[in-house]
Image (tube, rainbow, N blue to C red):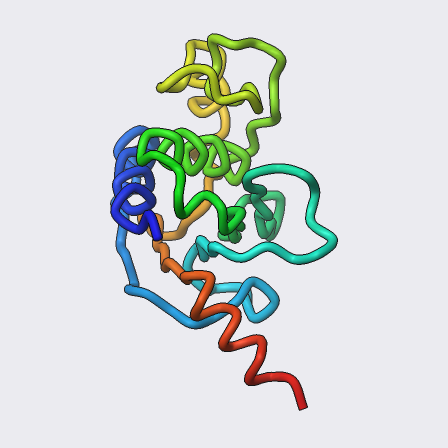
Length: 159
């Protein structure tokens, strides 16, 4: 698993949007178990009906504000170079903060992930949305679930 790259990307994003990042450790929780008030869950697991992407983000919105959410990464990402994982996690965190995909190779929100860092348009969007971004009390809380942990949890839930 690319846990180190995931943690580094979340730390970097926290610095970018001015939020302290708190890692609540690893978890065996899966996205279907995510509840309001839980930390951001980053999961290497992929449902059968998932779109044909490397990752996707699901924000949780309360009172018009992004308060938390989860990110699912395709399990194949575990074998990807750390730089690809970093770009993918930053891109998905951008979605949690209200950014949409764009068709501009100079922006990290371009789904092709052709650049290493957020571009000017990305940064303008983050500036406009970060006050209502994911997290409470100035913190971005996160947990990482590995695909093995998630699959074991799902298997244990089958009667």
